[in-house]
Image (cartoon, rainbow, N blue to C red; front, side):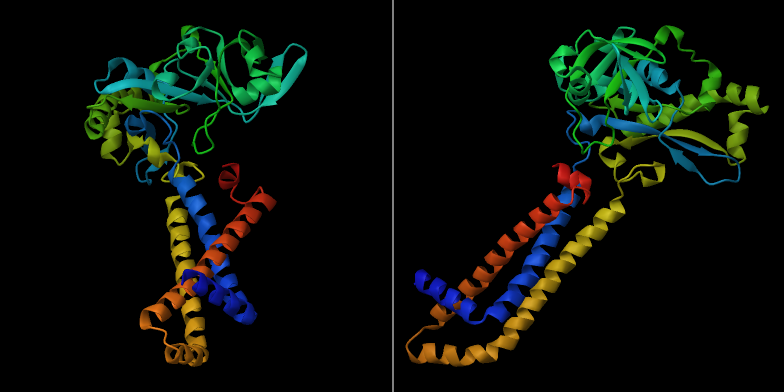
Length: 378
């Protein structure tokens, strides 16, 4: 009987080409839109979830306000904050700072020079916080002064093959660095991506008290498995309040507590790594959870509109189907057989539309590499 249902569906489709084309076109465009929206949404929600300890990694952000002004939140923190968290703080397993350089950095190798992006100075504890796949070297290499960790892509670009990069010398305006490790590139669904990680010269790092008023690096922390984020954050606030009192007296002539009483604020809070991309648009991140909700709503509306359109067209066509249905009943067709025939036709239209939708979505992704770059790169 199934063969008979399918043959009948094909004959009806070929006989009513305009009706079938309208139905399939409407559904296929909707399917294509939903597929693209699904890819976008799933990509946005997957950011930074590839790290092994993703649930315990937090980005520290600053909440700053002058008396009478609104609170301004920023991912930049004082250079002194990282050492404080990594050396003296219960509940913090590791902390790492990331110092961002210029938009482009001139890097020399032999007689060649390269204008490179995503060049950072980081603490040696960076690999204790983040999960990185090493192709050569190990996670302790940044403890050596003058070390640089380079990604596979950057190594292939500079040396021709990443396997030739180890122990090679690279020169920047800050000095010479030796390649001590090669790692895989971070996936595109990461809010932070790098090409070069330079070791910090701790011997010449001046962590004077005044640095608490300067905000430059981004600080990340890995909390202990049993640590409570709110508790660690509260203790950090109390500790920083005490540190800031003499600093404010030296700079402004009054304590931080007096500044705070007047409406000022200098506080450091923890943001889960999984929320950095979507919940930090006000801090300069490209993602926005609002866009995710909007696209989800659009996807639902597309499906609903396509469904209503299909139902309306089928209802309008039902009067034409009444005669053929009556003939089938006279010839002995049962109620269940008629039901299976109609279900087969609906499933057939849906399958054809789904296949056409996949083709349309693939064509959109293939023809336009600038259309939602994160999706295309997947």
